[in-house]
Image 1 (cartoon, one colour):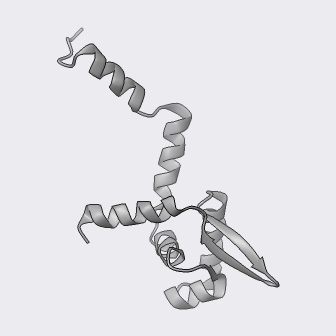
Image 2 (tube, helix red, strand yellow):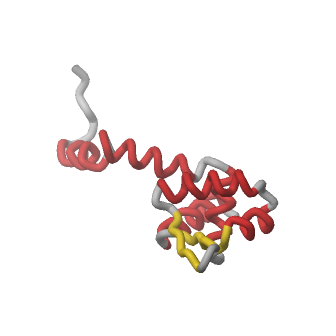
Length: 111
């Protein structure tokens, strides 16, 4: 057995900090949402304004069926919420943290 160069306190902190099990699975799913070009573009647009499917499709130049599919995925993941006005459903970010993640990614990349 090899001896660790870390002291026991640091080792315990690392073991308590590194996610495992259900938390790890949830984090992987959360970050995978940002790994899709279409979803990332939709989330970025919704950071500016709530929009309906038609507006998202036209503004971003993405097929309406694709937008609807991705919005359903984002809603199921808890990233967006809906607000119905008559027959029209508007989508918006569910939480400012979603926008914060986008901004931190841009900041990290130096853009």
